Length: 368
Image (cartoon, rainbow, N blue to C red; front, side):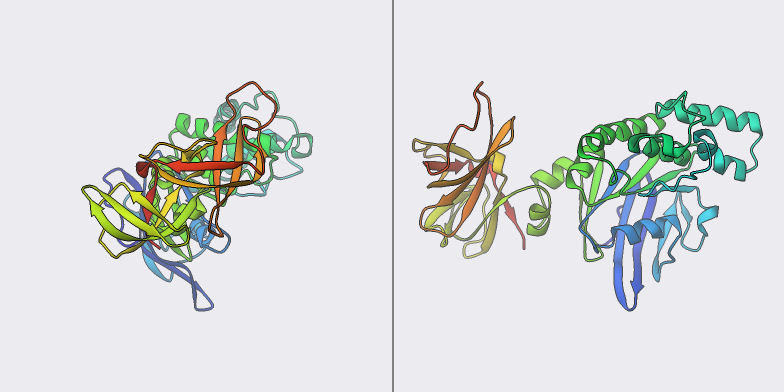
């Protein structure tokens, strides 16, 4: 993604930032802006460059090229301890021999704040993360979720302009992680500090962030709100990386008004796309599992319609996931349906013949 976004409310502007290790670009010409007061997530798989980009923002790495502007000031050569930035590490990095209050107030002590001011700000920070009353405990006397909150309070107590979070919930179990995602987002909104979150967890990024930057091979390939990233992915990579999606290769055979008719040779069927495309172009249609319909009876003619046999069923309580092997093709599509009726088990069973379909408007046309 080239060119920094000229956002008038940007706190952080990253301009053509590059960092190489042994000649390989871990961050490759990244340009983006992060708005004041937002929770911005850097999302990607291992080795995509998201942690290196976070370390560049923190000052732990120096860029080979490009600039980092924080509130209009070039931070590229400013050491970490002189930046109005704090970082919350995955390991939390708490001092085991110190109490909760001393851990939270450590940075304030280093800054030589008066004792009364330190106590006041530590109390405010612990109240914010709902740990008031635990000031005297040591880290080993806390749960994983409480240690995470201590680390957050310590990061917030110095009131940085920018808080960086490196996989902050990775050490928590699933249920606690889900609870803490919402809690972190609430705290961020309450304090109004700009957060930059690094994660490989799609659900975490979607739940917590106001915007997401999806990274691949050192580059940011799409920036958008969680809804934009999910519903209108900019490429096949983003569509496949975020959530589940069914992909159909096809070529455009004709255009009918605002719709295009596509031939999907692997399916032996024609599909409809809800936009005019160039005749002869080869495209990929992407359809999310929850946007497909499934029925024992033939579906309405205004849908893209296929048929097949249910191969596998996953009952997930509130919903069920069906894998349907399509007729005449070595292709399995996934359909997700809510379990609306009061009954034990899914609505369809493995081995049943079914019809599947979707509205042309439900599919997105993807670039490779």
